[in-house]
Length: 495
Figure 1 (cartoon, rainbow, N blue to C red):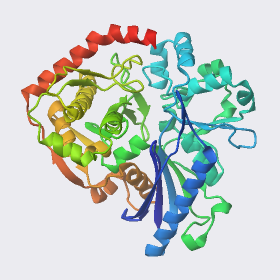
Figure 2: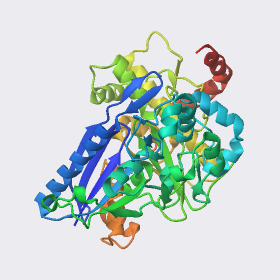
Figure 3: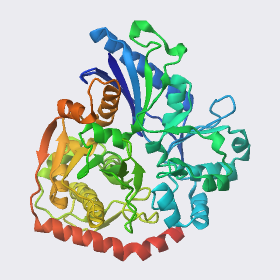
C-alpha cells in the first residue's frame, strides 16, 4: 500500500508518494501564484485545486508504476490561516484570502479594543490579535463587502476546503484552528462571543476533529483503479505543516526545539499542558491527544535574506553568497533587526521595521547578507531565551527548510544560541511527517516512536563554538530594538 502526502505550503504545493515502509517514491512541487494589490494577497481557488488534483493523479500513477500498489491514504498538512468563502452550494464566491494578506488592520484594532488581550490569550493561545488571523478577515468582509458577506454560507480554512473536495465532508482539525483566533484551544470548541461580534454563525464553520483523524473515503469522481485511487482510499486530515514537520524530523517529546528555517522562521516545542505565562508564548493544540505546541513565529525570518537577494544580489546564487560569507567570517558586519514584514515573536510589535545599524564605508553587499544571517540568529536566540526563562527545557534544535541548507547560517545559529543543531536527512519534513501519520494510522508501525526510530535519520550535526563577538552582537541587537520602540511608534504615524 502507498501513501500520498500533500503539503499546502505558502510558496509551493508539494505532493509526495511513499510506500508502506516510508520510502519516498516521487515528489512533485508547484508554485502558488498570488494576486497582490497593496496589502491584499489572494489567489484563485479553482485553479489551485485543479493543480492539486493533477499532482495527486500523477504521484498516484507513479507509485502504482513503481510497485503496483494502491493509495491507502491521502494525508494533508499545510498552512493554517488562509480563508475560503463558500456559498450555499459550497462553491467559492471570493478569491482565497492568504494569511499573508494584511488588509484587516483596522478590524484587528477594533477587535483588540473589544477583547482584552489576556482573555484572548487564555482562550485562543495567541498573545496578540494580528491581521494574519482569519477572524479579522471575516470582520473585514462584513464591514467592506456586505454582499459577499451575506452570500457566504461557509467559512473554511484552506486545508478544510481541499479535504471537502477529496471526500465531501467539511471538517477541520484542532491544530489548524488554533490559528483562527475563534477557537478555544483548551475546551476544543469555537469561541462563540467573538464570532457573534463578527456576525458569523457556528453552523457556517466546519466540524473540528482531533488532528490525524480520518475524514472519509475518496469521492467516486476521483476513483481510478489504474493509478491506484480506489473507494478504499482514506482521507486523513493530518495536522499543521509545522507539526507534521516536527513528526517528520523525530521531534515528538519535550525538550526538543524544531526550527523551520523557511520563508517564515518558526520555533516549535511539544508540551503536555497548555503553557500560559507572562511571556505570552503562543500556545497551540498539538498533533497528538492531550498535547500542545509552543510556537513563536517570526514572519520576517527567512524572508529577510530572500528579500535582500532579490533586491540587491539578484544575479548571485545563494550558494555563491554562502561561499563569499564563509571567506569573511572574521569581519564585523552591521547589526540587522529582521522586522521586514508582519509581526514577529517574541515582541509582536506590528510597528517594527527592518534596520541596519553600524554601517561604515568598508561594508559591502556580502557584509549586509552576513548581517541578515546574524540578525535572524539573534532573533532565534531571543525567542529561545524567552522560552527558557518560562521554564521550557531545551536540549537541542532540529532545523529544516531552505535556511538549514546553508552550513554557515546554521553554524551561526548554533553559535549564537549555544545549542546543538541537527539537520535531518529528509528535507521535505512536512510531507514526510504526514506520511508517518498515515503509516501509523494504518498500523504499518505500532507507534510514532517506532516509525521515527526506523525511518528518521540525522544527516548533519552542528556543535556550538563560543565567540565573544557574537555575544556583543546580541547585546547590541537587543539594546537597539528597545531603543527604537518609541521611534517605531512615531514612524507608524507617518505611514
